Length: 632
Ligand code: ADP
Ligand code: MG
Image (cartoon, rainbow, N blue to C red; front, side, top):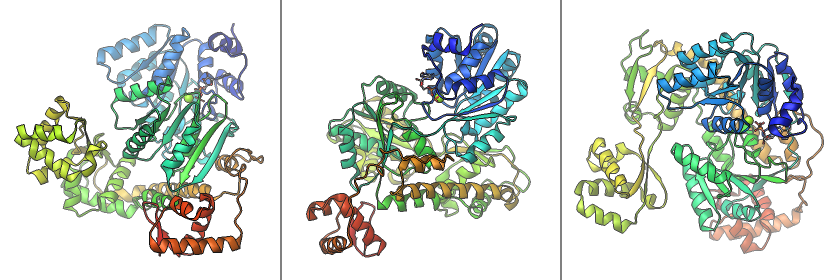
């Protein structure tokens, strides 16, 4: 019989195990529930793949992303191992054929997304299979306290019911002690063996840089880039913009966000994986499970919402073990912004009660009724009817959805995006030939000034109101223009559907979950505060700060982060006072950003920023959203 090591050598060509891999494999082979908590790139996959190969039968692997599933299945197949995946868009017959194969065809691995487990046919087949291991990849997705919560992960407990004696192995790289505890609880693991590797990534230099002119800083960093890079931003719009700017500076970049078609995503991912594009400017839609060895830079242009997601994203750097840099850029305004975006917008139980009451009135649901009733839903109309702040209402509805009080259809919140692919002259001459297109097109051009520069979200209801045309007419005109290659259209009708999942009981409905809401809100707030604390603390090794957040008590500074390597440019009081005077007199004439100030005064920007911070704290100056400072 083969041993684990022989399998490793035979199929993977490695001569030894990394860190805890062997112990983890032993635990699974012993039939015990197991948790493998290894950092990104730590080699989690073989921890379930090797036990599955050593035992008779098949291993069921639940994984959150189709791209991840495809990668792993392909790489197993390349090794001559029989593996298959249940992908999206399968017909009933195709699904049955695949499941038949998995059951009777000596397959070793069946990969599926958690949503698949809801299907009765899938359950029935899995029950018949000779399952040897259940692997849950990215297991933290089951916890709503984590940043990647996926409600469908709750289906995974079905597997335990179908095969009560088969060990479950949960794999994750993100784990604060609390999320870990919650993940174990939600997966219903029984006295699991927990293996935790150190989260220290010795080859990553973490840097936190205060910089008002971020593009300038990104350019400087990327000039040193010898491999691949990821630039993380917080919005789709920013992804497109920064990509355009980098391209015009001569960098080979692409952008990636959740609004792209599946084809586009695949194409871009592949171009990046095979190095024909070196820089990906992306939102957090680009991420989980990406296995690209030579990422030399991960740059965050805006503050992340939690250190969990930051650590995960930064951890995509340096998977090959060679030196890499993870940079977090920030400026004074960012701190105000994250509070506004992530804390002030949290829906409280009081907000939820108000929105819920409006909802049941809007749909005329009688007390005690409404369970499983589905309604078509116009968000704009709803907000206008009850004079609701759209920002708060949007968050509240999503919270109600998360709490399983209502269910919003997938289209909810998506907006139609238009980008023109021709010049304004071509467009105007087209309008001369088509009067309806002209009315609609010109309305759009008037409403959205910058639409020729980047893909722009368009509110069709607003266009309808301003142009006096029906939405259906607008859509057909836009589609026609798309066919004639005048524009690219990503059409989403915001009029989504909404289903009530529990009967109407007014405030009682919300009271039941109020505690949970408060816990979640506190958790969110703590996460944001932890990010701000991390950014502010520039006297302690960055790497130590991060791993401590994940419960690790390490003592040795990394020596390469921005704190450790700081050849401290210290500012003495006298000098600071003189500089402050110069800055104030400069700002009396005009509001300026830190780089302009540093150029005018011929001090380094890092010194200028230190003084600006003192002046901000003393409320002598203020900063606006363009990062310009002015006298208060
Ligand atoms: P994770 O899922 O933890 O992020 P993966 O399972 O994708 O990590 O593995 C990361 C990389 O490490 C892969 O390229 C894999 O082939 C490699 N790897 C795994 N185990 C070993 C080992 N024992 N020796 C050398 N490389 C390994
Ligand atoms: Mg993995």
